[in-house]
Amino acid sequence: MRLSEKFQVCGIPSLVVLTSSCDVLTMDGVEEVQSVSDEALQLWSQGKCVFWTRPPSEGEHVWEGITCTLCHMYPLVGTRRGCTHQGCNINLCDACISNNKHEHPLAEYLIPKKHYSLEQIFASVPHLLGPNNEEQIETRTLWKDDVKSIGIYFSADSCPPGRDITSTLAQYYTEAQASRHPFQLVFVSADEDESSFNKCRARMPWPAVPFNAGALFELYFERRADGNILTRRGQRYVSNKGVDALKAWAQGENLPPLSADDFEWWGIYCDGCNVSPLVGQRYYCSTCGNYDLCSACEKKGHDHPLELIPQPKDDEH
Image (tube, rainbow, N blue to C red):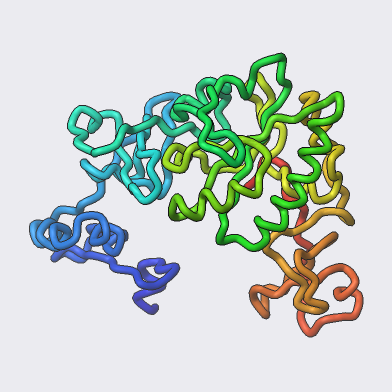
């Protein structure tokens, strides 16, 4: 048996640290070095590992893949706090908050799939910026006047598909605002610098979360005014349904799932005809690896067996 098989190494680089009796001290050697540099080697030489964790209490969330910056609990269990500023990679568990000396204020992360009110979701946002200007708008104006839903739009200037979607979305947004069913939309930037952020939001007729206030928003979703998620796949519905999608969301309504023939596989293209994104049923070749065909190209045949990939549900990422 190869050592990589014995220790179930799934990717490289990978560093497995053993004790003198050949027991596994840690399987996460690379991550521990990245976390504490040379301190990891000093601890290993003493038969200690950097990372530790604890069993979660009832109702506590386990943040898989996340390490507490101070005590190195991995995975982090329970309340997680982080910095809203872009580029500040800090995560603290509840026990380490009292020892926090970070230069920026920290905010509590939202637990995935847990229900929150809009006030809780936007608690870390001090104000919004008006479209194409620096006017400061009260965040709570997003859900005033009996608003039924809010769209949170994630994009970046460095994303060419994002620019195309922004242009289309801006057209539908303007049309919806002139109808009986105006739709609330807010931009959250994934840009790396403020200059790119300003360039990106200049194309948008809706308000934006300030540049260093949106780092804790990690998913694309539309929420009703009660905080319930309508959809995480808004861009697909906008592409397929146009302004009707915005009008439905403005009334707090769910849209029916896209049919198998209409579903767009964002980030996936057909290796047969090169259409991008792949639309409709998707067939995958595990032998070739990273090889997908649309239904039309699948009918032409392929050298290896193909797997029909099921359309993901709306609450799947």
